[in-house]
Amino acid sequence: MKIAQLTAHSAERIDLPGPHGPVAALRTSAPATATVLLIPGYTGSKEDFAAVVDGIADAGLRAVAVDLPGQFESPGPEDEGAYLPAPLGKLVAGLVERLAEDGKPVVLLGHSFGGLVARAAVLTGAPVAGLTLLDSGPGALPEGQRREALRLGEPLLREKGLAAAYAMREEINARFPAWATLPVELKDFYRRRFISSSRAGLLGMAEGLRCEPDLVDSLAAELRGRALPSLVVSGESDDAWSMPAQREMATRLGAPFHAVTGAGHSPNTENPAGLLKVLLSEWRAWLHG
Image (cartoon, rainbow, N blue to C red; front, side, top):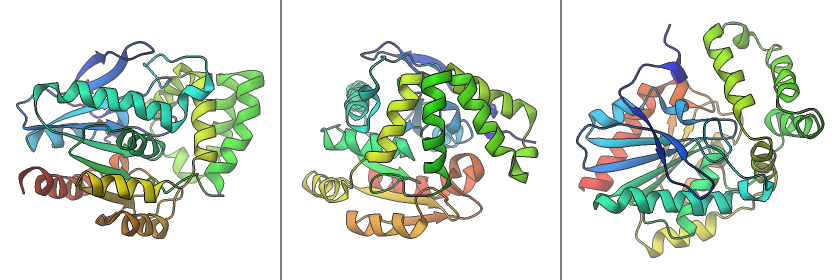
């Protein structure tokens, strides 16, 4: 059984320079005409893109997937405010500038919370060739099970730390039959990743998920002003931001919208082949006309 985050791939583990310390990344090394920078969501990591990096590389694009500061193997500051989308967006803009130093275009993709960060990067002037929002939304996470988990997890994180907060997450996950079918190796990875992350980072990102305003109109104006293409992609059964909400966001952006079948909130792990088919078709049009 293939485990998405633990999928074997050709990308090398590298560190990119960042203002809070090295930014952990996976980078493919095959010859490429452009770079795709992949930004993970809340509690995520670069490994969330393990199942797609080789497909991106096979299409002639360099894939660079990162851990944001405070996530897994990237250190971060103790200031919770540093983990809101706007300051993280400035950091990602800096990564884009560095990746663009070779003169090749950089396409930016943000998944979930990473989508809020990616749009902040574009709003701060990141020199991208295009923006993809994957299972992200116009603003704060709407009411539902995921937002409730943030509410329940905050006091545990503050009072008892990462291990206690993750134990609560496991108790919640145990209520769902799908959790019982996950391989032990993947459950172990989830736990190791969570407790290796920054408590301040998890708290700050959670605040961003609860409070981020709707900035779609500002983003649309920025994209139009710079003649940048954009794309919105959703798993057909996303349980974070609904597919209709994401479709409406795409309309407001003037962007194509695609739904990935057989996927929920994370097509990159749930149906990577279906996701790649959508992404590569759009990106080829952006980069080659």
